[in-house]
Image 1 (cartoon, helix red, strand yellow):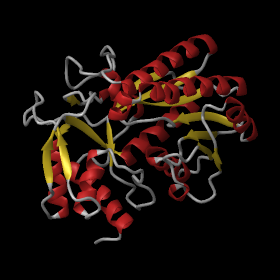
Image 2: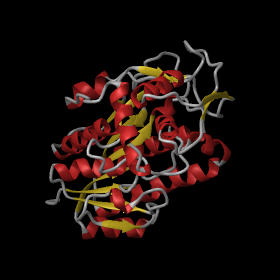
Image 3: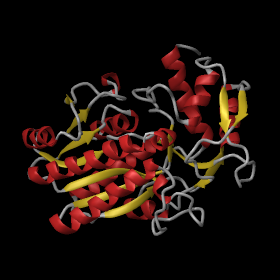
Length: 330
């Protein structure tokens, strides 16, 4: 296929929109498919085609691929809230797994043979060793992680049967906002820790809860590997370039290899914002493993990827600037 157009599903969402901006910054042509259930038109660059529709609509996906001469796809569309997946598991299997199957089938019918899939560190569950590398046996402890793992299995089998080249990117905890504030987290209600803490800092919510203080970690709260959304977007651009060069299928962690506890994150937001936050201890959330930190050597060696925002304070600063813009404070 002569075209190098990239189809971005969920491209009007938080991560997807950052990737669309990164692609446009490097003059990669792209087209966005989003049902706008959590995405927003206003975070997209001007001039990028946006088709409002369902990623599970195979006829629509095939038509988009043929009309826009799509050469590769980035698949972000899906449901992502761990706690909600525990209470609504069938919705997650439908949205994340069944619709991905329909999407994949449509790509194959349209002759699109390159795909980057947005997966998650939640496929690892509660790993025996931390940092966790890509060779660790997946053992998800919530339906969100299980729904993403099922899609990984489908991609592997489809690649073997149909010659599809796939990259699976297992994200750790994504946070922050574009340095130029072209995009950031908008979806309400907020579920990401750094966004919630920044909302408290700008007065958009009265306080926050620390969900569990009895985990087997240094301070009793969950530990996560936080990655800036712009570094994640850069990794996606490098993966599209990898596929365009004829690169092989691969599964990669995307994190920094350094974990921070909930209390450490709150302290960082207080430090950057210059104020104390009302953070009260509360019960655990269902489906939360104690610690998830990436072994991130493979992505650095495979792509030459070098993160720019490895300081937690730098990540928080962009997230706080975004919240201040949203709420017109500071």
